[in-house]
Length: 467
Image (cartoon, rainbow, N blue to C red; front, side, top):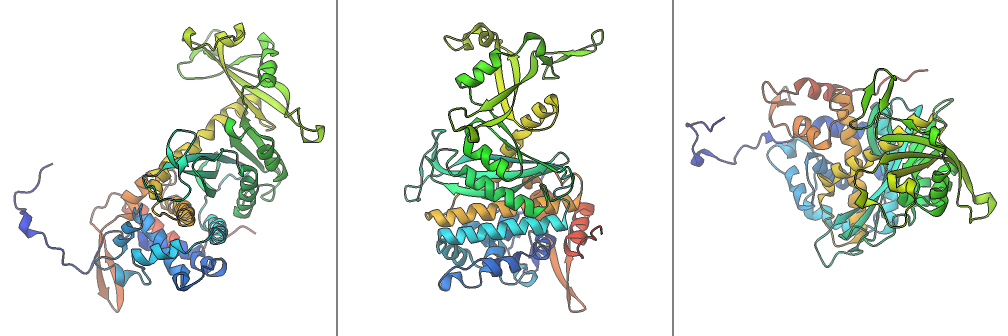
């Protein structure tokens, strides 16, 4: 591929008032309105003062900018070019949006949380975000978003050694659908991972139920809360049980867990198909360095009997390949194998439950997706403004996930960066015909069919529901 010899630098002129760079905003914002975004903002969000006037237009402006790729307040200026003013009304300037976000209080962020959870419900009614909801996984995790300013409120050095702010996230997914974000909360950078996690999980389970998952979906519906060892606490597990969910949490290597692992019989271990496993046709089984076993276990035995939790410990062990990695003082059993224990009350069979718990890593993909998009920055010095920015970023993620689901089976599980490239940032030229605007998009666009599917289903009537 080479630049045409007919092109010359002086031939470039920024002078066409009819061009737009993100025609995909048309069906996506149509989908957002169909899901009730403006109505929800007008109903729940009340920001005081002049800066809080007309909050729906400002919230939609932020979401539109994030959908198109904005990761800072200044980037929202990409909505104010060419024919965008004719194609969309009510677009707000970046300075106006910045003032609006800085006017937020903690209560306003909670109001925006209420909008986000109900917006997810509206999106789930328009797109099959939670297909196969008879089994739903709710994953909880947190991350440190690095910041580089001394004036930002709440910035501290976190558990990873990175100076920034802590974002707590919860996603919901099913075995056949990609995850969406059910809740988010911004915290100080040096906060313990479990601080407020029980309360956060309770609120998130309510949002998930409202979106169409949980016991209310139908007989036999199952919700499993998955988390890593940072959330192996009574508050988190108790919150999951109060919310009607099962739990699957990585157990910490405390004396009680190690004692339970030591008590597993040698013939109780089952080989599993693991990386580099070999199938033995004679024995009809996998020959693998990984094996799984389970044992009954009661956690938190130092608490009152009524607060102790009984379940099972599913243990995966992998043979150590480096003897130097053995911690000093370990028993022979722990010198030979590395053990990974999961504490769960899931009714799934042992091997299925163990494999399902490893699927918890999907939340890390969501975090990476956010950090490569609107969460590349926390753009304000105000903690409340950054908290609102985080909530708006999760709403954008869910909106793009719904748009991808409506576009094609490929885009249903694609990253938001791929959706932006193929469906959102599509150049177009505005024309007027019979007093109506018409969009002219590039000929031979590779994803034309997916784009047209999104336009038809996103801006059309809601899907018919079964009686």
